[in-house]
Image (cartoon, rainbow, N blue to C red; front, side, top):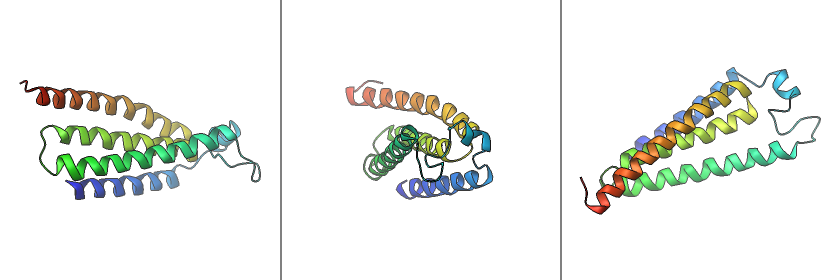
Length: 139
């Protein structure tokens, strides 16, 4: 399962890079200051700059959390941790969407991010419930 997670992460990152190349930030996005933390000849918008690096840190932390969950709980066959790992992967996709929103076409990645977050949270909530029921010894 750990190898599948690593492959899925790499494929997702490549997909987001290709999508960003295919749909770069429009002139309207740049004019409305919704994309590119660096603009105006080296000057930067502090808010976008902070969001960008916070998104990078969040995505890296979720990547490590997913690797940890897949290399421990899922590898040892703990019950219902596969669903939790799926939720972590969806949160990783959310982080990639936030980075894409700040650097590439704002509307496309913003929509992806807005769809991915609720699904990820629902999957994580369901998985957490199932795991807690297993720990309590319920059915």
